[in-house]
Length: 245
View 1: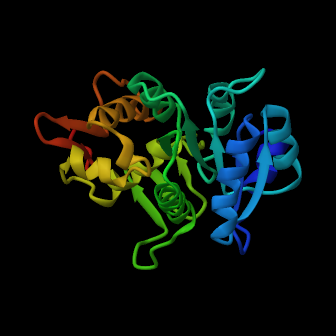
View 2 (view 1 turned 135 degrees about the vertical axis):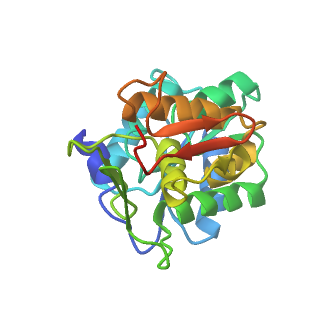
């Protein structure tokens, strides 16, 4: 992991740190002001280099990211940030096209908002991402193990039966967590959709299918013939905790 990104997510500060990445100064100041009014610690960046400068010296919990930026665009930055599951990423863009929204979500964004944003919705979605990023349910076991797979909720790590770490985006991690929690039980697509941080902005359950496909490519020896994550047609998906083969 690059040094600037490692420092960005090193640990959770007492007050969550949000970085607003937006090239238009008035909009950037408005978004930053909304977060600051709620007591968040806020930094601003107008482009990729400024974002790196901020993250190289100060850990972050959430980045709001415009797609249209000078030079390096937001999609390119999203590709770099997506590998760290502990960093929340919210795209805030003037683009309202479903193609852009789905692309951003598939690349690992936690949420997608269209400008102009409603202040209350912005703050509610930010709180939701931060809660999922750092919130811990003490009633749930911190580590899940099935068929050699190990998922650590706290470290947000997944290790294969061979012992090597599998890098997952936040959406993939959330889906795998939900499936392991209910291993050998069919989990409906709607329930899986509810587990995703960006669930409020997804127009259909197609995103679940897309993420499942990506997850299979990372954990299945033969993705077209999955051993772990099976499809129950018309119902949902199930993680087989028992190897019946």
